[in-house]
Length: 344
Figure 1: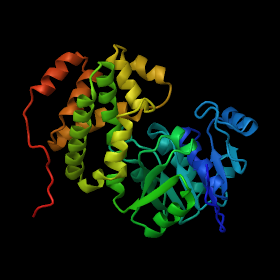
Figure 2: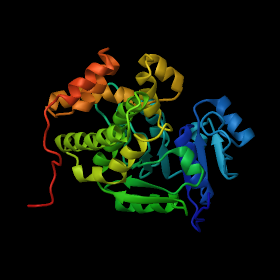
Figure 3: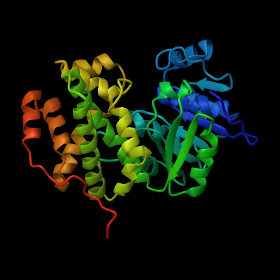
């Protein structure tokens, strides 16, 4: 990756040993910053140090020589004023609780996790605020497959925060000739979009498994965006955020490629696998599976019309046959196409 070298190197930590955390750590190290990547598993951290490669998540990708990999949390965080948190949602709070006493006041905490806490409806930025005091919080989200980032495919993402200086700093830290960072002040909308799109990747994976064509995929993606915007408005987010990179950009990416774990889960279920078997075969966290239950419950509570979410929930958790669910979807009310207009 062609980097943008900095004349003012910073000490930066990336928490998480997965594919996206590794991709971000490689960018930051390549830009000349003192970069530490923390991995929970000491053996995996040692393997990455010795082989200079994260063989489990990004095999064949050489780690930047300046990237330090450690399983020692204190060592990773020492002196860092920017911390990227790339931890799956089910473990996010527990890790942040461990991290909180080790942080200096005013540290920039940037979540890269696209999910919702399983036991309630807390997004990752909510957890960062609840478990720490005096930190500057942001969210990084967009159409970003880690494998394509490290392969130098042109990529853009969004840093969202009400803190303009934080956004500007992260833009500089991550910018390279192939990686571009846009900013937003709608933290909730950007983060909600990243969580919601995972659901719809499951249904497009099912459609492909059933040999449906591009007409069907286009239908699903477009109506998914309409559902996302309705839900966002009901939750108090700006629905216009969803027409940007973090919304429709990420939705198109996740619903169109078998690099998406959620898409692959949907594909396997569409081919007749049980949900548990599909998740086990993927071998990595598919955040959309947990998110389906949470969004279905919240949509019912708020009275938000989300027929695709209801359909996915029926297939995954109510054991309803896919053909029956499809018939119900196609026989439902034919509503107005575009719910938002620029006209007064």
